[in-house]
Image 1 (tube, helix red, strand yellow):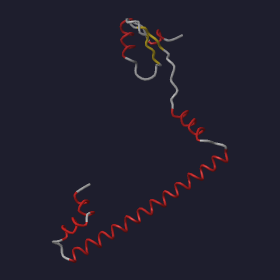
Image 2 (cartoon, rainbow, N blue to C red; image 1 turned 90 degrees about the horizontal axis):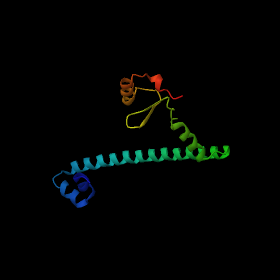
Image 3 (cartoon, rainbow, N blue to C red; image 1 turned 180 degrees about the horizontal axis):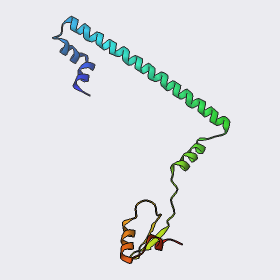
Image 4 (tube, rainbow, N blue to C red; image 1 turned 30 degrees about the vertical axis):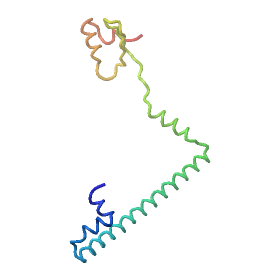
Length: 131
């Protein structure tokens, strides 16, 4: 909590800070605070109306889903199916000196291990195609 908020929310601290102010300055500060209060109340009321509208829309959608026989699990299954990418099968395979097998789909840049293998063994990409 900032020092200003501490002073503003504690009557004795506020009284001490206002001792040097004239009555007109205190009235001006009070008027400004009342204006800010009304603005905040209006913003809060707008937020509550927006939240009520959102909840009403959710309820309407829920009823439509219920009438159509659709459940949340159905929606989740669709989302999961769209979001996950299908893995591309490898087209090329090599085995390095360490006996490790490396596979590549042929998409994107040629992996370093494949470049090195092609240069060292004098073969082409097509020579390593999986049959």
